[in-house]
Length: 419
Ligand code: EPU
Image (cartoon, rainbow, N blue to C red; front, side, top):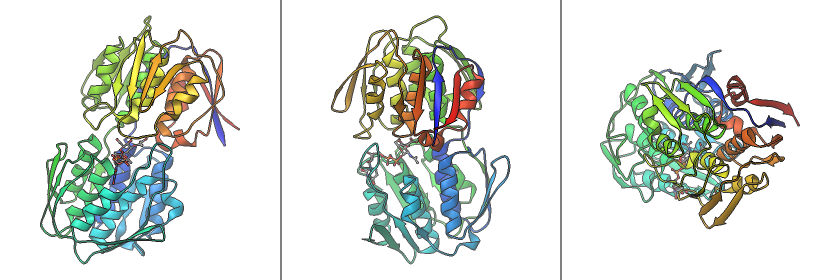
């Protein structure tokens, strides 16, 4: 297993390009199952999770071709079975996204229940209840969700909790259901909007995506299309924090600053100078120590849980005391314990971390526990004194395209070595 070696102390400087969004690519690939013809998807990031979703579709018999520029063509007409096996679902929870499309398009789906997860229990009860309200017959048997339906019908769904993949699964199912579906308390994340736009390009009739009420008029068929995935706002946010924590100056291309409002607001509070254009963001923190910021995670457009660990890293070396409150996942603080081993002063009280900024972190061997936790350890390594070795970086490869190349391009001393 590879590890990352980072020697801290370099202020990042330069320009890099942001990749397509992982969390939009995954539902869009699943959504391609709804189409009657081939779908072509561009701006797809080269990531392990994307490979897993492709493998999942291929196991079902779907024809998937990937060119050298990561344009993916999905032709679902060759599908043989509507089955998502445990061995794949356990490596990627987002596999649950095939449930709605399979059921709506083919009338059946056998999808393994995702188990627990490093960041929380993450049940899928809202996905299941929504499909049942749309007429699906669902049994949980032998660790699998076994779902059947002649044709789903529209329903009024009021989601108990704001759920991103839950909203996506139900919106995809509703696209081919008979009649109107209203999803209340829907997730408003840009990735939900991207999926809606993709479905609309296939012929779906969806309005309200990006608000908490999505209305879907079911249609009888959806056709193939070509679609470009939106830029990854979490990857962008991570590089912005990398610039801030190292007191650097970085410009990000191919990004959408409108999706980064809460993150840019917090970076400005930390003392950074921010510039934006329609598809770029620039951050300048040269010669300044960041100021501590308080963050509280909540569904979009509030501060994203997927940026919590990175801001915790920023607070460890900032001037002052910052509090980080995690309200989405009950166990998303593993990085705090690793950062303590690098000299961070962090007190944990339930879902709150109180972080006293220190002048200097010191390098230590650390272990990645989930995707965003790994990113925060990379950030800590970029400013720690000495060489930080980060193990279990397969987590990083699930969600950050070529992270060591992009950081090295910005001047970081980072390399991937076999363990
Ligand atoms: N929840 C339920 N029941 C459900 C579904 C969700 O109780 O049926 C709860 C969850 O346990 C959690 C809350 O609702 O407490 C919100 O979870 P959500 O369903 O929104 O999370 P998700 O859809 O499983 C997506 C992203 C995550 C991101 C979260 C929150 C994808 C593929 N994953 O997960 O991304 O953290 O939304 O924004 O879109 C990551 O990229 O590192 C990552 C974990």
